[in-house]
Every structure is written in structure tokens, then in C-alpha cells.
Amino acid sequence: MEAPRRRDVALPVAGQVTSLELFFDLVFVFTITQLTATVQSGGWAVTGRTALLLLLLWWMYGGYAWLTNAAPPVTPRRRILLVLGMIGLFATALAIPHAYGSDRIVFACGYLLVVVVHAGMYVSEAARITRGMVVQLLGWNMLGAVLGLVGALFFEPILVWWWFASFVIAVVLPRLFSMTALKQPEDDGGPSFELVPGHFVERHGLMLLIALGESVLAIGISLGTGGVAIGLDRIAFAAISLLLATTLYWAYFGVGEDARAEAALDALPADRAQLAGLASYGYAFWVILFGIVLSAAGLHHALVHPTQRLSWEYAAQLCVGVGVFWAGLGLFRLALGLPGAWPRLVLGLVLGAVIVVGATVSGLVALLCLLLGSAALLLFERRTAAPVG
Image 1: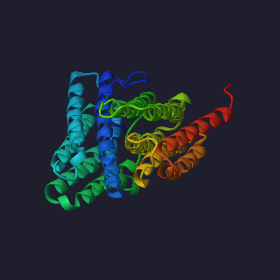
Image 2: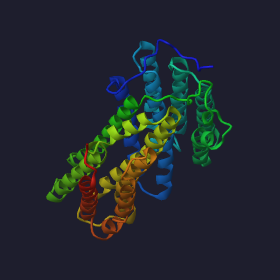
Image 3: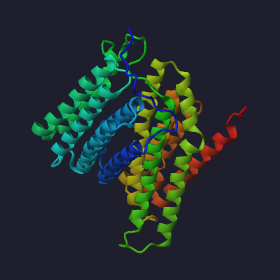
Image 4: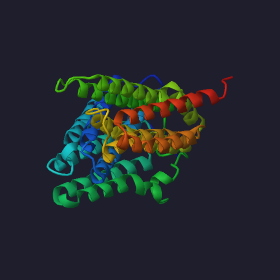
């Protein structure tokens, strides 16, 4: 027996990411901006709570990417629903700085709206409706969002644990137990969620591009406030920051990572493509984004006095952030079975150790070391790459 399908739902192809999806990504990147501003204050507790918020929000961003992969927003009804989801996402983003305090209920209600709209649009608009889809969206995701709202309403002192439980219920539990519908084939033999690789890869690539661009914009805004004169040291720091951002951009886009990822997903059976898509563009991409958040916060602090030593805390944000970005790129390759994963993982560890330079010499020198290390690996990969054809 086949899973029910709607004949009027056309699946997307590569090159068909709609302008509304891109606008949705712009709204999501505002959450990256808010998370960066939140983590700037430093501290392990703040960093951990911020990482948890990114986990929750990235899980639902990924959900909407899968949603538009199955039901492109090409009809008025779908566009309205997607905009409604954007409203919920924007509300959660606005509440991020005080998501565990005064704005906790706003954050929880916005998140619940994001989850409800996502589930409703998926089960009413997707071309193929499956048992696993219904269980994940109307069961696990909804239960997790409700749990967060209950914690926000009644358990403020331990709210972080309620959100952690929400994440475990929505993301971890369905993948640990074989009794869940996601771990079982559907009646038609296929996976719970089908994937169109071309659109899926392009969508996430555009989001990453916007996120990297936002980090560059933050540097310009910090320099252009007019509060302090722009000296040569800050010009040099800004230039090296831009070169580093360009190098990180090149590490994904310049080496054809998107094309290789699409080919890898295309070559997999449907059930394995579902798992690989989740592991690469879900879990590994979260690591990449968290690296952007940390490094952007570290750049903000280092820019104040580029030639002075950073505190260990701020040096960690800058250096570990860039290292985490590279580690995420390595995990991305591992998830898709692409070559060259381990050098990127090793570089992530090496660049994290540059924290010593930032804390004992200066932020500017540390930034230069991060740039040279990143560029060196790209040159190494270029020289050792197998010839095409």
C-alpha cells in the first residue's frame, strides 16, 4: 500500500528556491545576529544556553527547509502559511536576549507558533503523507514546543532544563528508539520524508551565504558607528577579518562543496538520503553556524583594541569559533562520505589552540594566524585534489 499522494503538488528542482524562501532565510539569520549579541557577554553558562537556543531554532529552520522541499510555496495558501511561520520566527528572534528571563513567554509562544504552522502546512500541503511524518510533526515536535511553553510559564528558575528536555524529545528520542515511526519504512517502502537534493542543497547554501555576509556586516557596523576614530590598526583588523570571512566562504562554495553534496545525496537510496541529509545539513551545519556565532562575537571584542591582548574568554570565542566552523565542515564531509574530512577536523583543533596567541599577544595576531591556517589548508586541498576527468 502506497503512502497517499496529492497529484497537484509539484516537487522543486535545483535553481527553484523561491524568493519567499530566501526572505524566510533572511528572517532566520536575524536569529543568528541576536544569538551573537547574546553570547558576547561571555561565560560558559551563557554560551551553553545560547547553543541550546540555536539547536532548537536550527531544528525548526531545517524543518521548514524540508517542508518547502516537499511543498514549494508557489500557491497563495502556502505563501500565507510560510509568512505566518516567519512571524513566529521573528518573535522568537526578538525575544532571544531575554529568552530565559523577562521575554521567555514571548519566545516560547513564538516557537510554538513556528512548530504549529510547520506541522499544519506539512500534513496539509506535502505531496506525500506518511506515518513517520505525522508522528514526528504532530507528536514529537509539538510535545517539545508545549514543554518549553510550560517551562516558561511555571518554571523560570530551571527553564533551561525544560528547553533541553524539549530538544531531547523532538530531536534525540525519535532517533534512538526503533519503535518510533521514523525508524521504520513506510507502507510504500520509502522513508518518512522524501528529499529533492538539488533544491535542498541550494536552500541551505544560500542560508549559509547570508549568515557569513551578516558576520561581515557586523564588522562594518562596529567600525562605522563614529564613536571612535578608525585607526590603521582597525583598518588592518577589518581587512584581515574580511579576508578570513572570504576564506571561510571559499571553504564551502569555492571548492564545489554544494555540487559534491548534491551528487552524494542523489546517489543514495531514498532512506539513506534522508539520514545523510539530516546528518550533514542538520547536525553538521549547526556546528558550522555555532562557529559563526562564536567567531563573530570574538571579532566584536577584538575590534575594540586590535593590538592588545584579549581575555582568555574572548580569545576563546574568536579562535574556538573559527575552529568549530572548520570542524563543522569536516563533519559535513564525514556525514556525506566525501573525501578530505579529517584534515578539516584537525585544522579545527589546531585553530582552537590559537587562543594562546590571542590571550598572550593580541587579537590582531591571532586573527592573522587564523587566516593563514585556513588559507594554508585550502591551498593544500587544491594541490592534492584529484584531477577531474
